[in-house]
Amino acid sequence: MTIDKSLPPMGIAGQVEAADAPLPNPARPTPRHWGLALLVLAFLPLGCSKEAPPPALPPPAVTVTEPIEREVTDWDEYTGHLQSPQAANVAARISGFITETPFKEGSLVKQGDVLFVIDDRPFKADLENKRATVTKAEAQVTLTKAQLVRYDDLLKKRAISQQDYDTNKASYDQAVAQLAADQAAADTSQLNLDWTRVTAPITGRVGRLNVTVGNLINGGAGQATFLTSVVSVDPMYCFVPVPERAFLKYQAYAARERHAGVRDAKIPCYLRLENETNFPHVGIIDFIDNNLDPGTGTILLRGVIPNPDGALTPGLFASMRINGGGSYKTLLVPDLAIGTEQNERFLLVVGPDNTVSSRKIKLGLLFGKLRSVVDGLNPHDRVVINGLQMAVPGNKVTPTEERIPDDDVRALDAAASGSTNGPQKAERPIALSPKTY
Image 1 (spheres, rainbow, N blue to C red):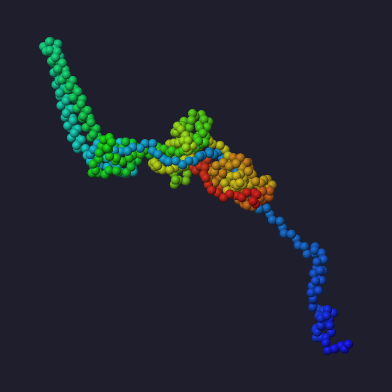
Image 2: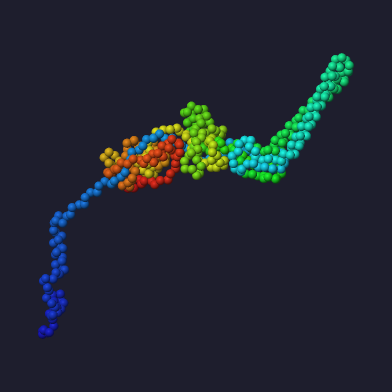
């Protein structure tokens, strides 16, 4: 076989090696070199490249406070309406023309103050006529009486008959009766003259003017013209419906105070209007209805509120607080520190070793920004009030003790004594449950 030497030699894998292919450069790394390097690095001791771990973080900082102990009162709050104890519609008793209206609409008047004046000239003339008739009747009585005296002497001397005496006695009796009738007519005329001045029947605030000067008004029963109205302002009634449960509680409170019932216990109550932020009006409960409404399950209760300045107006809606349970001592903490887990309330408490624990509690009422805790808290517990999200139960913290602000304490003392603010229904942020941290 003849070999053609002009063809390039075949490689091991049957590939043709180019005659001009460059020789491999021993200084240049090949993929095989990289693989060997990685294999060597994999078997090197790991301890030669280990770094020191980062320093541990300090316990989170939180703010804690001790609860304060105060004597407070539980108050029940209801919504009611104001009503005057007395109200009177002013109407004329006689007919005539209005000549004067010497009062200012909406002002306070006293009983007997003149509100309207009716033209009195016809009534004066009628009174003079009646008085003249009375004078005439008096003269007739005097004459018949003198005749009766003479006839009495003549009868004793038997100068006249018994019939003549009886006739003269009847004339005297008739004159006396006529005098009485004429005197009654004169008294009626005097009343009509007095009624020309329409006065305030009660002390209170007068309403609007329904009839102006120059108008003819009618008097008498059934057709009297309505002139104005007067309502009393001091004191003022506040009627509120209370549920059966509260009524029974008030009965028990009255029994503890050795009273026969709520009506005799004189339970204090406090009132505020819609534009007031506290309860500045102080009164007592003086009446409770005699039966409970079965449809609503409530009974009507009435508070008497002094109103010397007339600030309370009949018909207004008002909020009333009632002391139904007496005073008691309790621990109070800031309301923001209280958390909620389903239907239970809890506080985060820092122990002596600065470890956080969750404490289930039973809440009372809210007084300003402080909440009463009736069970589950001790006087010297350190309660977390700031940093609640950082205080995880079972972990340690760095506590900073802080007192409850003086403004909150002053508001609490005022609320607990019942002088101003009472239990409030305030919306507040709820802390997360420990299970969600």
